[in-house]
Amino acid sequence: MIFYFTGTGNSLYVAKTLDEEIISIPQVIKQERLEFAAGSIGIVCPVYGHEMPAMVKEFIRRVSFDTGYLFVVLTYGAHHGGAAEIAGRFIQSVGKKADYITSIEMVDNFLPAFDMNEQMAKDKQVEKHLAQIRTDVQEKKRGIQKASLAEKTAHKMYLKMVKNAPETIWADFKVADECVGCGICTRVCPAGCIHLENQHAIHNPEKCQVCYACVHACPKMAVQFNLSRPEKNPAARYRNEHVTLCELVRANDQTTDD
Figure 1 (cartoon, one colour):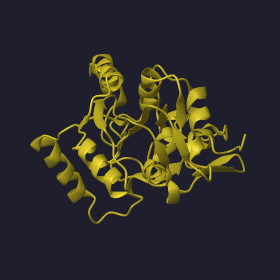
Figure 2: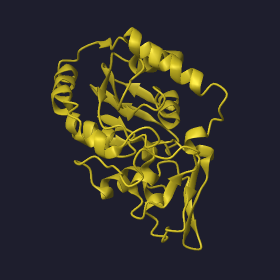
Figure 3: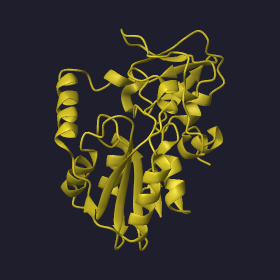
């Protein structure tokens, strides 16, 4: 049993690879009671600023697991910044304990800093590392991935950069005139932050998880960053090649209760 959070499909692909029973956190978190039992339970999610998304943290706070083995796999793109240790401390702070936490490097979807074409061209040996994680989980390996000095430094530099920035710094989007009102962005948003008004998408940053699903999935590239600096490659977008748009919609859609 694996609970996952995904924006552009990386974490969904990892979850699908590790277990047949996968459950979307954005969908299940709507339940009043979160109680689950299994011999092994996993959480798979990306890290933003080297930490788990706010929704995943909320899920971990509220959930009750009856299991002999809890593992966490964190997807990242450039620096994990000691994400496993950071996640471990958070999980412990809410009265829970993870037996195994690790990270896996994949395509980085952070458009303000990375060119998606360059990212997709890099060989990050995803399958090799994923196979090792699968073996670790099957053998119920225990331990939390240690952070190198370089990764700890990367996290400190990030914290310094955003120290005086608003919480919504990376969730400041604009919707250009190219928007055709197709509604795809509303259905891939795990937090229900986007709605249509007069066939034009409107983004509310209040509960935004900064997963960038809306930006990457827009067929007209109409959902754009409202930042002073330009994107590395405004013409490039990303979705994990092993995940379909329909799968992202099923994972994240908040427009229906069905």
